[in-house]
Length: 239
Image 1 (cartoon, rainbow, N blue to C red):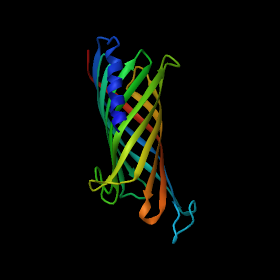
Image 2: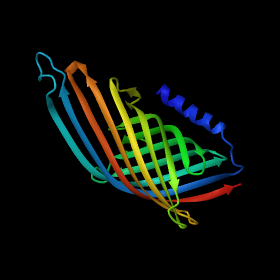
Image 3: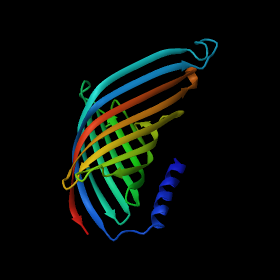
Image 4: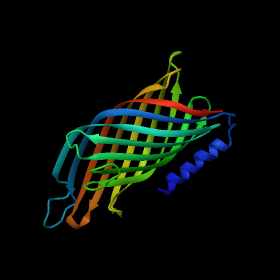
């Protein structure tokens, strides 16, 4: 986690060495997203006198669902720097009393006309309501990433971004020990120039490993999300 936070500081240092443009904007956005969710898990024995031989996979599980939700956010751009606050709330279709709520703070830098580097903090809550971890858990941690944009035509702009999350898993304020959890995301977005409208396709994958030495096994699990979404961005002020 310390290395990720140092990385965020390096991002700001890179921006300070560039020439900031004399421009800025204060924006807001709203959107909708829907997609799929998949969960896979397995438990592998580490071996002992009274359990399965080491390397034996003695438990597997998989599940799937669809999700739909709302996106909200606001951003401030000043020269080559930007800061963004986002909220994403999604409900699971089959398990309709279960929700995922993400709060994100992002700091970033424009490098030239096409490239972006960003870093920030994610707080994701899973439970029986918005920002609730009842019957669920909370995942928090820093993320780092970058993106590039293109203009394939006069009417559209295409952006691609990727990020890495280093996540801490907790429940009721207590951190899960001996658990490693990493997140990876890839987003493709098309904006329609001259309008507030954009559509996007996003893939997210979270991979975890929990060492359970008292019962001599390692529990591996993964969660995969694919979302198709729409968002509209509005200028509150620009200069």
